[in-house]
Length: 565
Image 1 (cartoon, one colour):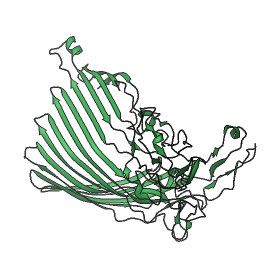
Image 2 (cartoon, one colour):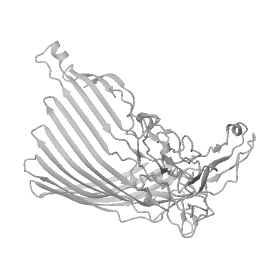
Image 3 (cartoon, one colour):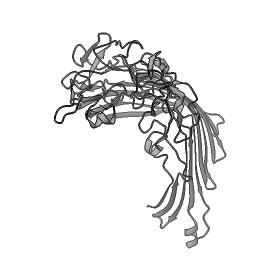
Image 4 (spheres, rainbow, N blue to C red):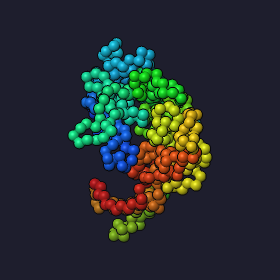
């Protein structure tokens, strides 16, 4: 729920247009998070499953109802200064004071890496989950210059600093791949602790509990010195008008992100050859911090044609590259927030999860000339038009990880990236063979005789988001006719053809499961390489995320009548 109060003031004098204002926002979230509360059991074989003999399992218990809140304030002031008839300067400053997120019943808790102590907020001198950040001053400025004074050639450029409000999901809705603790509100402490058991019985017996020995296991902690994420945006563009109907614009758009959210396991094993932990009384300790960064650069071009003898068109082309070392504060897909190796976050720099290198769209509309005169022929032959939308886009990046089949890199996280030993695209053919899995190998010294690793554990050399999924191509077409029934009533008949050429568009291979497993078909016992090919199993309208919801469906035809009055 959001409560918001806004007050703005505008003042124009001479060549200035000044605005300033204030905003107060209170955001509350009430939720429960019962992930893994039904329990997960694993069985070594079909026989042990039928006999009710689990080999491992996990279950959580406790009351997960949480109620969080945040109070934030913001002030801004800006001025649009018309220096000359050809030159305009805009400048301003904004200050955001994002309040510290709290829990109404003080159910947040935090772990202090220095002392190794877990404390509930309100005890042991822990007054809040993290310290407030009052340094969120955001200046911005832009200029517009009419080069000829005729409005046909305009140069614009601008730069601005922007701060981002924390998402409360970072503290309430985590689904890490190494543990089930969903955030700093769900540790084993306080009046509503969340307890974990990983010790199922060896034989399931009717009427008897399957799990026992509930207690503390994994933690989710927060850096007490969180900084507010900030983005520096900058752009430069030239707009040229040709005649009355054509406008061409070419732009450079870029940004740099700093203090972005990620988390890492600060209790990862200290050595690849032992299981020594910095805090042996706990399992995984995922530590949320604002240590990630990003950059984005793009060349954008647009050609617009307006009302040229009944023809209108907009053509857009975007060539861009987005790079970061964490693409989210949540890890719904591997390595989006949690690094492959928590001690080597520098190895995570790569393509952003949402990086799209090339995107081209062409939208066109043509209204056919209507017959002159009145009568039935004018009604029948007039008002016809055709719409067309063409979209072309390159694929989005991803990487392969092992899916809990072994501690192949020695970190104890159980979702490592592999070593690249060949061409990932050799012999591939979409959709059944997107990636050649035999081009990847476990990151350790492999023994064919023992069918396992014998040492040499290291980080896999496959770069984060170094692979690319299928591209996207779609052409939508519509034929429609507008007919005036009276001065106030108009009827439109239209026939829409979606994906008219019926081109198949498939998602990134990690959708819809949000995991692309190197060991999908197992591991070759002779050399430790993955086996087979990785397919893509869904279209964009089903898989979600590539490139947008609704894209990728087969050809669809829709007939409609619309009345406008």
